[in-house]
Length: 304
Length: 319
Picture 1 (cartoon, each protein chain N blue to C red):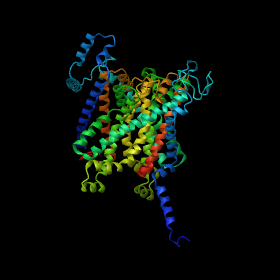
Picture 2: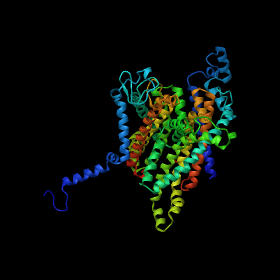
Picture 3: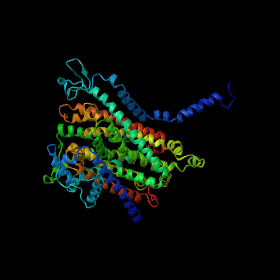
Picture 4: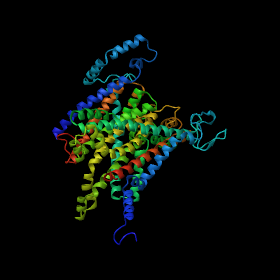
């Protein structure tokens, strides 16, 4: 016997500790949450679709074929190509365009969240930590930006910058800045007077070190949750901008502009709008489920 | 209370200053010459120069900014180039149409969303809870313009139950007006309703599991009284915060919904102003919309304070 009665062996103790750690590990908790797992799988599939678009797309998304325009799902063209999700108003393969459209959605979701997140987090950290006049100036500017309806601010920004993916990312990102700044500032207020921050200050650490070494890591949980949810709304915003003719312009395929072109063919080719809309809906559901799951794991008090 | 309201009103001044300044900067950054936009591409150089002088565009940016403030403080938001009408008159015509849609949607969302959320919380992990929370997830995830198109396809094009676009006339009777509202209102209600259901559920769940509710239940208080008089009252503050945010969403939603259903409201006006590069109209609508937002937020904060006496804005405000 490796151990005496009533006392666990070192191996058994290690094994128990490992199990306990695994059970408490945020990643494992997330994977145990069924809805979050579904969200995670959807998000992974969309990311894979975006990355592997050139490999998995059955046709060239820009190849026009006037003879095959507005055909329904399962249509086989004269060249013997099966268009599983049909074709658009220029006879382009819709499945390929939707696969390439995922690239736009993913890039906009990540890009705008990074732009809005980096600027918003920095402003929120400074406002919350410095307080006083600096806080007042930053937060009044944020309040002013917040007073613009989100889509309106993004629309004006795109009008100023011009259409194109970079400008859409900047527009949606900048429109996101006040939400990030407000959220982070609130968190900094909670954290900055904790004992470990006071200790760091007493040890003579500089403001920048305290902010980035002690405060930021302790505000990261709500930031991660918010950023995940924000990706869902960024996808919707890009689609909304494209729908209003201010986002990604054709011939580049985006779910938003496919949906917009489908608007003109609702009676004759409803598959155009339906399929593009379903892509957006499923992806946004994925991000929302994942966001809900991460929130439940990182902040059990917020569990819904 | 009066002191708080006054302090909050004073806080609105710098925010309004930021809004007006930001609007001025952004509209001046829009590419193209506003004078050419008014006169069209056929205009001669002399005509453009005259129009620039009339619009004050030949002055320095600082002078233009000063003139802009002067006009706003005198209640002059300029004239829309596209419509040839003063901006305030245009807004006066369009705002009531948007309010009819937005307020109807918001009231419906509250009346349906909150009971669903509370019921789901009380019956947590039942089939009802799963089904309605899944529907709520769909509600917050669905692209509103796509949902609107699908509604048009099914209920206007295929079934012919409701008109696909336009606004009704009261002279054709109640139904003559309301039939045009049905589809846009359903679209605008969806997102706020789903949000209210989700937040009511989580907020109610938090309160019904507290010790004081358990204590009241053990004392024999009836379930409906316990739920609506005690638990729900304490679950209200987060819901009120979300109501304010959803009012903001109504403007964004109106921009998309009104454009699809050709409902002549402020949302459609804003979209047309931006796409037509109608500078005065963009400036005017943005400032008015922002002002409404700021006032709504103030009202929401006051309502929050009324239902939650623990919250006080004295000495530093809400962090």
